[in-house]
Length: 356
Length: 47
Image (cartoon, rainbow over all chains, first blue to last red; front, side, top):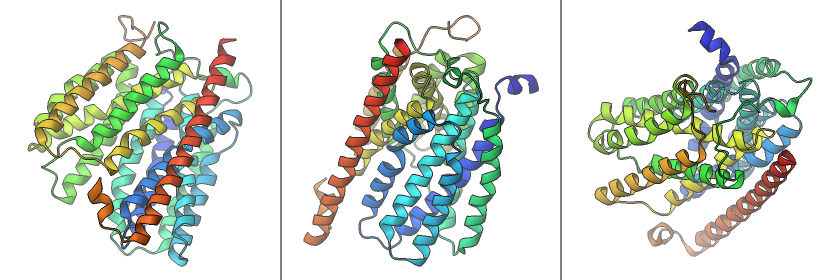
């Protein structure tokens, strides 16, 4: 077991798990503070989603070209500055922009480091991404409490040594462009452009479905915490299982087995949580496909997933499916489209679950 | 969608619409740039 995790080079994933946790905690703490008395709450969330998600493609491309830049440190400083601006001035939009750009910097650098040090494994990036779910729920809960500024800034500062340490695991001197060549999960039968479109479509569907999952059982704070914990566990498990049993099997499990659990788990928390966990496993699969298509620019590949996530979550601000039966039909159809796209984009595997 | 905008006064509605337009314009510019970068990368990698 120890050897297996060493082989996966999961260290950078664990370091960035903490950094990502801190990032999302600060972001969601600040975001819920903005919306306390705002008349246009949804527009602030919409602006946050766009400003934090979409620029990751451009910032990712810049980090691809200059991989020695530890953008996470700049990101953590920008987020701290945003908290100060939010607390002591009236400039809401300035604070929001600083927060979003800081968030994007950390995400991009996390993806860059965990993918470049992974040697074709998905576990490091999956563990890194999973930290966000824990941060989101912690930030939301803390935002309702009267917390002074300094513990949050101290928390941001505590992540800086982790970012510096993670950077040392990325071997820089030679062959930077080849560091992600070990990601060979995408199909060779269809064009790379088509694979990018299919993978982004899957992320969009996943983003949209995330809000459509029926969770009538969620009534208490503890249940909300559990939902986010299982979401985070699912994201990490998706990458770890892909490395062990193979990415196609994970793609199948995360869509087909998750669907009935999500649909019939509306009133049953335990069934629903397992469904949410399995559903969250798709994240690693789409990231792996995109990095396989853009191996020289993992930051840009990660940025495409965040563009898809914004496109998928944007309709939620304007349209909602209210009828539960129509919602169930929609979830089923979207899941099948998702599975079709994934199977089309993925390369076939050998008996050991590795792509051939 | 109508209900979403009904709650605003005329002045608020004006800023909401301009806010939305600004957000979507920036987003479109970013997506176009990302596509250009991806096409360039794929061409370079294939060459």
